[in-house]
Length: 305
Image (cartoon, rainbow, N blue to C red):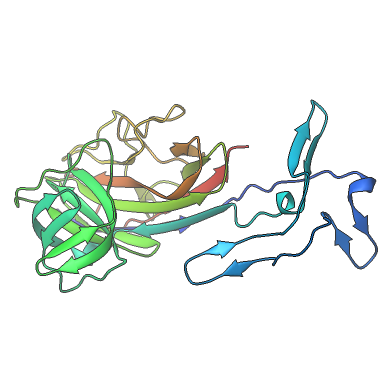
């Protein structure tokens, strides 16, 4: 018995907000304006930019420093009061219809049919598609004859070894996806990738939650309980590419999604286009009721302050 299984992703972003408490002497304001920072200088532009860079500058600024105690913090100077975007978060899920075989993978070069691929595409490289697959994600930097070159790869601790047998590539795009048709003899998988830029000294955390069980009407697929989604058993869960989690088990075993927030990625420092992914897994038994199953996964990112 087989059935069509689908899932959908909902991306939620929570951005930390810095709140500065300023004394009356540090702020000039009226009913129509507020100047939070001022400086005496000899000139300079507020910003200079092109397609490749953005520069904040000032000429002649003096006494740029910070002071603090247990009760206050002072950042003096004009530029210390300026900050741009703190966190950006992009999500890209597996397009099941984009499945194609690959025959070799060396460094960041993948040998495959390049017809449907474009520079800038995010892709997943998978060794031995299925229950025990080994995966990596990257973004296409260039395309040659029968080959693509990725800018870099992100793995879950182990790099795929490609021999052309059950080794595949998927494009990653958008916020919804499908597990396709489940069978009692295999485990179906799908990858949700994401990229984070965080201008935060202490890094960030990404958490996941769902809106209820993977379901079809009053029926649902059981959450995985034994740490491994196994063919022939009715089980559903996921595993993270971050193998250093301290507050959840997504780093070491297949783990159930719940309505409570659980860590899937943590970082303790600044990040620029830092990529990770979650591999979603589902299996059915011969007694699983046929139907189109679905639910929503939400991802929340917040800064560590």
